[in-house]
Image 1 (cartoon, rainbow, N blue to C red):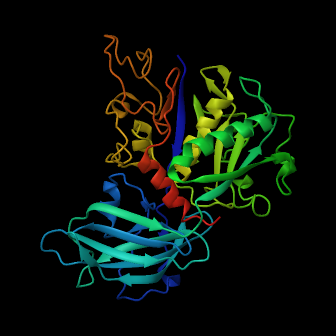
Image 2: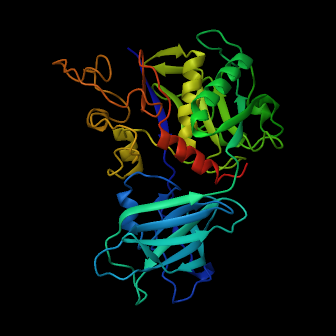
Image 3: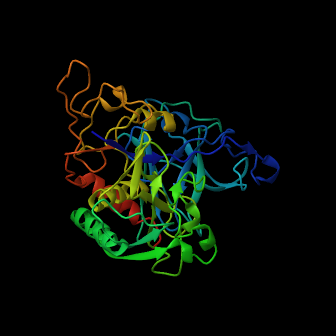
Length: 415
């Protein structure tokens, strides 16, 4: 039984060195403490205890031009509402230093036992703001932050396009489909599984990386492209945002021969944040995967399933059940699941998995978990955002709340 893994990448920032001389801030402003290593993404419903714990002293918020945002958390007994201070964070090229410029100071509204802060982003491109909480004396808020939520809403269309970028030599599929036929299979899968959420896919464009006007010479069609080996960048970021609209504003699906990591089918950042180039603008999928020393070809249905799964990560949807690798990479062990009410959770995943490699006594994952052959099953194994794909288990697509999450974040992204 081959167990294949979907990869979710969490984007973190180096602690960095704050440069006060170039910040332009006054003594009355409550600056984030050095080390902005926590980032909140719009409409994420996971527990995010680490964000709540660090909010007063500084966390990052991913924001997009023209979008409306609401940050909120529960009141803590007698503690009066703190002031939310927002700063534009300007990193240097390698994120080792950053400057700050204050953009907002907000008083809370109180409703249903929560402090609520609302604001609109007036930037020219998507970026990160830092947030702190100041009490009436100008000190960091000392009340407990519970049930932290960061929600966003935009005005962009529920329709978008796909851009399939073929890198290197196309190795075909297990069911022998051409690139054009594979593109049609992917388009059909997106239309079928996203339609219940009112999301429409207009078309899929197909491009060959060897024709890229800048980087084309790197992507010879004579040699298979292995993400992570042919280049160190697993996300093949440089191919994002290629061409003029409508191709430029499409979701870039980079098709590689395989991702050069054990059993991994695809890669994406959690909430990529950009349709149209730049970091996090690409979703990577392979036609093959490697397990041990052997390479296996995927059929077109599996490749389309991977593209959907990784694209949902791009739009902010987490695994239904977090793997131990997810928890360790994010360094927030409160995020066991996606926080959605209509997706079940499998408590066995992060108990028995280790860095996405399963113990040798797994015979048929996830039905047999021990040498004693305990008959246990994960209730979310047929949701498309289950972290593993299992032979013989058919996907039933997305839940209603997962689709709402995708559509909400699509409305934020310029396209």
